[in-house]
Length: 136
Image 1 (cartoon, rainbow, N blue to C red):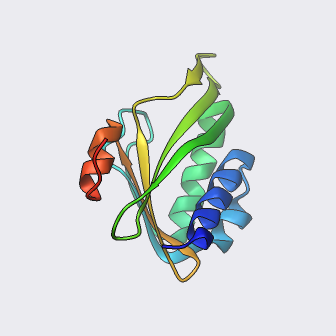
Image 2: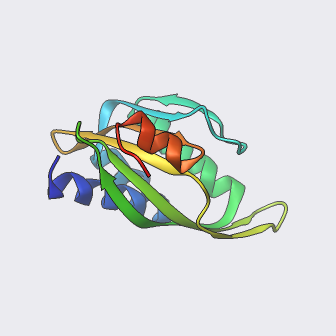
């Protein structure tokens, strides 16, 4: 794990926030996996491949009038995984429901050769830390 890997993760957040599928594609491995199977939200599932990740970002844009994820902190696991808690600011397109908080959620990012290879959501945050060998 290097500072460059953290920068790749920051670029991924920026691409998601901007709805920039091309930028996301540039930093995502062809065989990337986005595992949101633990999500309690409507986009629960496992998305396989770079194009599936881009489609997931498109689904976010459809579901939310505005959507911003701002990293709050980064923790680096012994294996190089990057655990990120983030602040969510969003407004549902159909419901108008507004979210503005730091949820008890974390994403675990795996980066190899400058590309995101896997992103896994954990709820609660402590589960992410445990999964990669870190503690609260």
